[in-house]
Every structure is written in C-alpha cells, then in structure tokens.
Amino acid sequence: MLKPRLLITRFEPHASRLVKLLNEQGVFSLAQPLLEVQSSAECHDVDLIFVTRYDYIIAISAAAVKYTEQALDKKAWPTATFIAVGKRTQKMLQQATQKEVQCPPLQHDTQGLLALACLNCVQGKKILILRGVGGRAKLKKTLESRGAEVSYYQPYQRVVIDLNMDELVENWQLHKINGAIISSIELLENFTTRVRDKHWLYELHLYVPSQRILDRALQLGWVKIVLLASLADQQIIDHFK
Image (cartoon, rainbow, N blue to C red; front, top):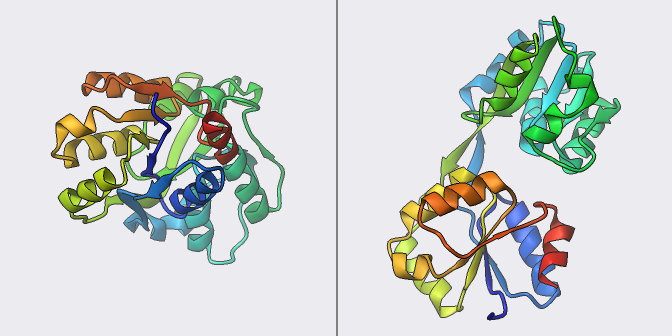
C-alpha cells in the first residue's frame, strides 16, 4: 500500500491542528474544511431555554459548549448534572460550568452516552441536549423511550463553504493525495457530491471514525474504507505511525 497522503476535511481549527501534528510525524497532509460552523437563529433563545430547571444537560460537541457559553454572555450556567460526549467536550464544559462533567469512558458517541448508568433510569427527568441544528434524533428518542422529557438547545449550525472544487481537486491530485479523513456522514455526503472526478474520488482510501459512517460510505459506492479507533488526534497519529 502507498504511504498515506491525506486530505483532512474536518472543521477548523481541528483540521489545521491535525495536519500540523501529522506532518510532524512525516505523514503528508492537507487541510481543507468543506463545512464551517456559525451561530444559529436559535442561539438568541438561550434565556428562554434556561428558564426550565433540568436534571441533566448533555453537550454533544465542543462547538455546542462554545456557542452556548457565548449566548449566555457571562451569565451563570444552571444547576444540573452535566454530561459530555467526549473528552474534549468534557474539558470545555468543565471549564465553562466549573462543575464536574461525566463522560463515557471509552465510546464517545450516542451509544456511549446511552450506556451511562445515570441515563438508564431517567423516568420523569428533564434533559436538555446542547447540539447543532439538524443533528441525529436517536439520543432524544431513546431517552424519551426511557421516560425522560427531552429538549434541544441548538446554538450553532453547519454551513457549506463556497469552494472551487475542480481547482481544489487538481491541487490534491498534484500533491498525490490518496486518502481522506471524513468525520461525519454530512461531510461524507458533501465530499462525495461535490467532487466531480468520480474515478479519482473512489480510488481514495477513506478513514472514518464510526461504523455508521462506514456503512453510509459503502452505500455511496466507496470500497477502500478504514475504520479509525476515534477522532482523537493522538489515536489518529498512532494509526498512521
């Protein structure tokens, strides 16, 4: 197999940070985010949302913490049991709230959250999920099936970056890019749709962090797919060492 030469499509600043780390390890990488994060219209509803007393507040991403903190504008976070999907989100939420934050020990996704002991007995509990506009409904539906009353606060949204894709593909080909790290189904579908040179596209090795993304890639016609342990920078670096 050829030595990996990677395209990193994640949001900034994650893409540039990972590229720097990979290049330091001798793994050639280029950063090219395809989507960016912006505040949503809903971010202004923060006071209305936090009038309710919640038993649990769950942050689905670091961006959810960042944009909630901005919307609160130095107001105190409410009293609740705080839960984060992953270590980075946990760290940001602890800094923002100055409270202890629970986090799945290993599986940093919806399944990991649902396996937490505190979320198994939520009959009659009020839960707020902090996330971006248009995320998956599985967490909410499952918690509601367990008897919880679940609401969303969606202070940010993902938007497509206007790019000259034909020009970018020529540059990627010039740099002999032979793989891409894809961190979500939304990015996968965006990438697959926007690159017109399908022969080149499907020759790439896709590196994805979940079985769900891998399954969707297969449906879209990809064949060369590698399942990563996670999206944590160090685990990605370890994979390519």
